[in-house]
Amino acid sequence: MATADVPHVSRVRATEASLRLAFQMFVADPQWLIPSMIAPVVFGLVAFELFQGAGPDFLTYAILGAGMMSMWGQTLYGSGWAIGQDREFGTLEPTVQSPTPYVYVVLGRVLWNVVSGLAGGGIVYLVVLAVAGAPPALPDPLGFVALFLFVMLTLAAVGILFSAAWVYTRYSGFIQNVGEFAFYVGTGCMFPVVILPFWTNPIALVFPPTWALDALRYLAIPGYVGFAWGFWPDLLGAVATTVVYVAVAGAIFRRVELHVLAKGNLSDY
Amino acid sequence: MTNVPAIEVRGLTRVFESRKGFLFREVSRTEALRGLDLTVEPEAIFGLLGPNGAGKTTLVKILSTLLLPSTGTALVLGHDVVEESAWLRPRIGLVLGGERGLYNRINARDNLRYFADLYGIPPHEREHRIDEVLERVGLEGAADRRVEEYSRGMKQKLHIARGILHRPQVLFLDEPTIGLDPKSARETRKLVRSLVSDGVTIFLTTHYMFEAEELCPEIAVMSKGRIVARDTVAGLRQLVGGDRTLEAEAYGFEDREVDAIRHLPGVSKVVSEEYGPRTRLTVRLRSLETTPDQVVATLPGHPELAVRERRTSLEDVYLDLVEEEAP
Ligand SMILES: Nc1ncnc2c1ncn2[C@@H]1O[C@H](COP(=O)(O)OP(=O)(O)OP(=O)(O)O)[C@@H](O)[C@H]1O
Ligand SMILES: [Mg+2]
Image 1 (cartoon, chains in turn cyan, purple):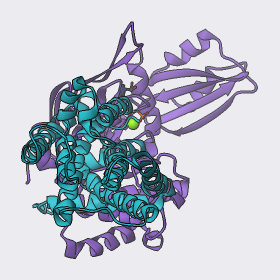
Image 2 (cartoon, helix red, strand yellow):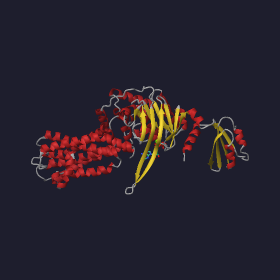
Image 3 (tube, protein in one colour):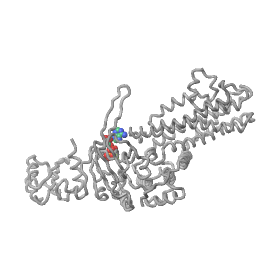
Image 4 (cartoon, protein in one colour):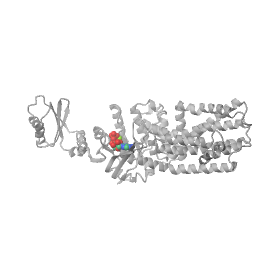
C-alpha cells in the first residue's frame, strides 16, 4: 500500500487549510470575541470623542484612527499569537514535519487575521456612523476601499515577520511587545506620524503600513498634510517596503526552521 | 527500492546545550547521542528499547527531520535527513503521541483535514482517506467530537491516524503505548502489527520489553546515547547467557553464600536486591550444568528460603544490558 510517489503539495491549498484552521479555532474559543468584536466598538467611541471638533474631516480621522487601532492589534498581535499557540499546543512539530513549508502555514494564519481585522474595521465604521448619524464625506470611496485593503496587506507583511520570531523562540512575547510598541508609536495608527517628534520618523518608515496609511489619509482627507512627498511616493514606498518584508519573510523562514532544528526547541512552550 | 536499508545511521551524535542564568551564564551540555550506528531493513517492525533518557526520542526526531544531528549521518530510504528533508517529509510519518500535538478545540476530522492538506492529499481523495484511517484506528464513531473530550487512548489513536494519513513508507512511533491502559495498549499494538502488513517500515521505541518482544522481530537496546545490543529476540536471549533464571528469596544472604553461587558451574550472573527485610538473589543459569536444586543446596540454613524458577525473560536481558552500561 505504501506509495512510491507522493502527491504534490499545493501551497494555495495549504494556505487555505491554515486559514480554515485559524477560523475554526476562533469560533471554538470565545476569548477572541473581546479583542476582535468588542475592542473595535470601544475604539470607535473613543476616537469619536477624541477627534470631535477637529475640523470638517474629523469623522474620517476617527474612522481611520480607530480602525487602524483595532486592525493593527488583530493582524499583528494575532499573527504572532497564532504561532505561539502552535507552540503551546505542541502542534508546531507535526506541522514543521509536514512537507508544507512553514511560511505558508503562517500566511494562512495571517490572512485569517486580516479577515478578522477587516471585520473590526467594519465595526468601527458602523459605530462611528451610528454616533455621528452621518457617513463621512469620502472623495473617492472606491479608491478608499482599495487602499484600505492594501493597508491590511502591509499589516499582514509585518505580521508574517513577527510570526517568524515565534517560530524562532518561545520567548517572542518580549520581541513582539517591543516591536508592537515601536510600531504603535511609529506608524501613526491613531494620528498622523508627522505630528510626532522628528526622530521617530525613521522608525516609522521601516513599517510598510506607515506609508500606506499616509497615502490613505491623502486620499480620504482633502487638505491633509502628511509626508512632504505626497500621495504617489507614499504608495510607492508602501509597495516597496511590503515587497522587502515579504521577501525577507520568504528567505528567513527556512533559516529560522534550521535554527530551531539545530537548537531542538520546537516543542518548548 | 530493494537493497536500500530503510534506515542507516553512522556515527550519529547529538549534544544539547542549555543555558541557565542571565548575567552569569552557565552552559550545560547533554550528550544525548554518542556515536550511534544502526541499520534497519525495510518492511518490518524494528524495536528500539532503552530506559528514560537513553536518547530514543532524540534519535527518532533526527530521523524524522525535526532535529539536526551534531555530527554523523543519517539516511532514511537512502536519503539524508538533513540535506534531503524536503524529499523525505512526505514519505515518512511520525507519531510522538501524548496529550499535546493536536488541536484540542476542534474535532478529529478537522484535525485530519488540516494535515491532509499540508501533505497534499488530493481534495477528491481527502474525505475518503480520512474515513479510512479513522476506521482503521477505531475512531469512526468519534470523528466529529472535539479532541478535548477524547481519552488518552483515543488521542493516541488520533496521533496514529495522522501519522498514517499520507501513507508513509517509514513510520516512526515513539512510545506508542505509554500511558495507555492495558486494553488500549493491546489495541494499539494490534494496530501497529496490521500496519506492517501493508509494507510500511515501522521504527518503534518503547520502555517495555514485552512490547518489543511481541511486536519486533529485531531489537536494538539503547543506553546513554549508544546502541548496546542489536539482535533478534532469540539472539538477545543468548547474548546475556542462559535460558533459565532462578529467584531465591530469604532474610538476607551472607557474602560468602552469594560468592559460592557465583562460582557454581554454569552461573553467568548473580544480582542481589533488597526488598524490605528480605533479599532476592536473581541467578542466571547458562545451560543445564547447574540445576536449581544445586543452588538451593548451596544455601543451607535458610528455612524461610523461597525459590522460583522461570525462563529468562527478555526483560532480564534488557536490564543486564542497560546495567552494564551504568557507570
Ligand atoms: N531539547 C532538549 N534540551 C536539552 N536536553 C535535552 C533535550 N531533549 C533531550 N534532552 C536530553 O537528552 C537526553 C536524551 O533524551 P531523550 O528524550 O532522547 O531520551 P528518551 O530515551 O526518549 O527518554 P524517555 O524514555 O524518557 O522518553 C536526556 O538526558 C535529555 O534530558
Ligand atoms: Mg522519549
